[in-house]
Length: 360
Image (cartoon, rainbow, N blue to C red; front, side, top):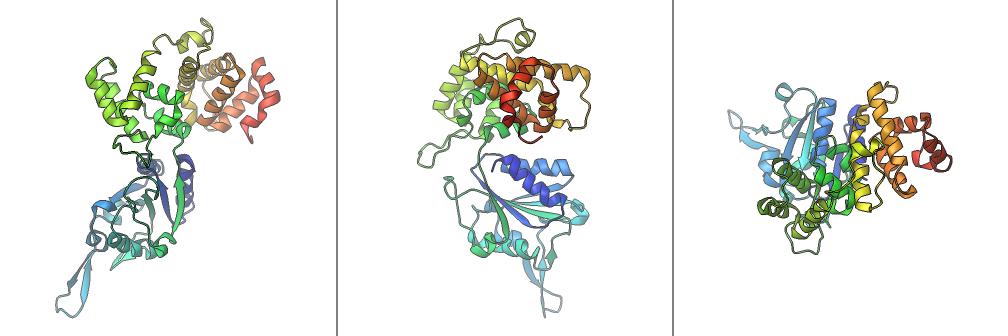
């Protein structure tokens, strides 16, 4: 599944008050931790992030000490665990790096996940437990979970998906346009880690975010410092291709000019990809629109211009790609707008391609 689908599975449990622990497994840097924090922000839950690979079993299980007359033992509960008075009634306990921590730490976490308690400590009623880790073939530190521990989780395998990353993260969080344009042209570059590679540097969604941060400070790709810093995040081979792509894109068609019918659609695949991405960016606000919402007239005109622009692209294949990207923003709302469109190009297209819209 992709990150969006994993997110919906987690939200399902929280919104329906199912206290089943969920485990998400995926490659490093794909945004697993980030999506859990997004869920917390959206639903009003405090996320308590425990990096298990950096902890000892005592930090999870607590410390035993004798009572006053030394006839019984008591437990000192770990301060890092959710506390209702301190953290509120709505918390997500994020057990990150659970497949990278020592067996002793996994065992300490076992009772917490199994019984929602450890020693004399009990997880607050409003706490949901989410575990995250890498898969065995992700070329990271991997320590297999014990069968009884794995059996306590609802387990999901998360794959890298460019469209989900672009629409759910890159566009809303303002990732630099150079990064989005390049990855829109070459989606496979979003994650280039290979298990049999000796290189320590490879591209991931996390490293592309760092590249974006660099470009926001200095986007001069003739500056060797900037290029070297990019290479330190995504590798030299990918950097060479990235710089070449951006430098060759200086004569791309302006989104503004194209939507105003001042220029024709390009035919070069790279320029089409950049133009389409730019048009999709213009209507990214649709992501937060509900099906029943009335879209302000000014914004509705912008959407209509983008739809018309997509249908004026040089080939039907480019139009289909553009429509799919548009639907990725908000399928229900975009489908409704397409069905209600008075554009004859749209009417003709829908006669033969309604399958793209899915159920509506």
